[in-house]
Length: 105
Image (tube, rainbow, N blue to C red; front, side, top):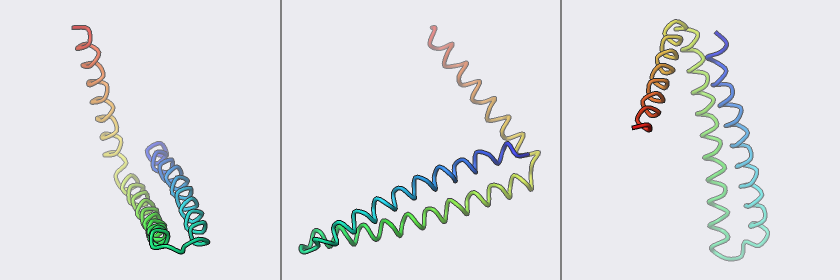
């Protein structure tokens, strides 16, 4: 059952990369502002940058927990996961067919 787990790993990898980029940009911003933080606006921007870095860390932690939980559920219930995947595919195919036939009318 490695196929159902692949999207979670992809999501985690891509999400982790995006969060790492955001964190790096925020750290760069706060370091540049820190050099010239003489006014209240600059100090507020630095504080906001630090809070955003903390938030990104929390989001990354939650994303990791979600991935781990989803992988555990897939391992516990492989048959149900396969059925749910098949149902989602059937619904998507039905909606696509409906949309295409409605377009012709």
